[in-house]
Length: 384
Image (tube, helix red, strand yellow):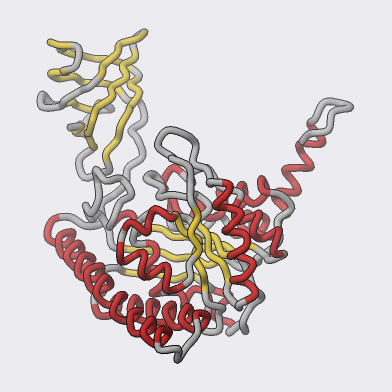
């Protein structure tokens, strides 16, 4: 394990450290381990080392002890919670999840029974199921307050009326995200907001509770290519079905919610993962604006990396709703704007400086960048 020697710029590797590869090249050392971490911080995988000061190696894959100069120390993720506070928060989180797994099937089952008795139709069932789910999440989170939640939606405070239909996008950092979005939907989007149909990865239906919940609420599944061995991408035949279901959802009075990263982001502090163009395509084809939301902190309770899992390091969650939904001119413009706006908030829990944020949201920053490309392009060449 790494320990910081506060009296110098060195990091000490203790004798118990297991190293899978150690390579010395031109006075620099690269150490790669199966699992190691700075004390009280998130695990790291690979560190470049600027100067090797001392090392004793007895086999190719064991490093007995070494003092190495890292130059500037890596970024530190402070643990808000330790010991009993961390354990108490984890216990509360597990109690909340367990309660949701019991309450959701019960409440949604009652709605489903009304449909079977032909008292309500499928459209009514979807709306009632979604209301039941948000009610359960909201009240269970009040009864089991395992997290401190800050909801930032300043434009909501002015009591805006119901807004036009939209495609909502958000970053994705934890399996807890859906619970927080349900519990705080009214605070984020307003009491008069349109119900939200979420587009989800079909593999999530392997969990029976997820399947009951998603199907009853009319959420829209999409199949994806195997993202373990190749770039994360949609299955195109499934995407065509998604487009038809999305069109019907708008006609039925729903908004759409989509996670443009397509999967959990294990390193939100480094920014967003590659962005799908699906949200842009849906918005363009339906002629609806894209609205942005962002999350920060849920991964401190349930991390996307299974090696970390429910190692609770913090309980403060920040949720942000952005104003100025708009129609983007291209998929690249949407992706870059989302990376700058939601990526910044997901990484730090804070927005960009006010002027810069406004420029990204109204499109003027992107127009400025495109103008610079044209200006700097070689004579006679038009940049794509």
